Length: 59
Image (cartoon, rainbow, N blue to C red; front, top):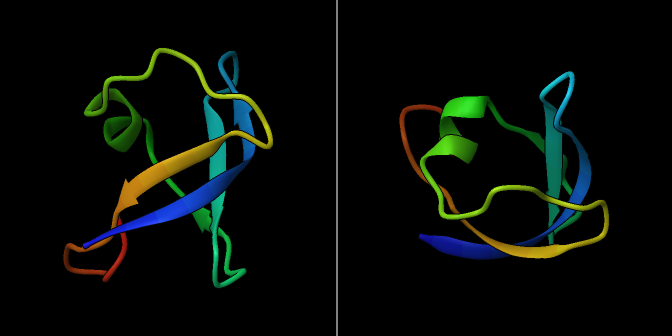
């Protein structure tokens, strides 16, 4: 399932990253999830579409 989210943090040097879906929860994500997508960089505040699923219910 895809949802829209806003990038909270993305630091290309430390690779720390997280997004806020429209429901307001914070979802940190690993570099594997980022590397699987088409984007090369993210900016704080940028709107993105994310896939939600997997064993934890989030991806």
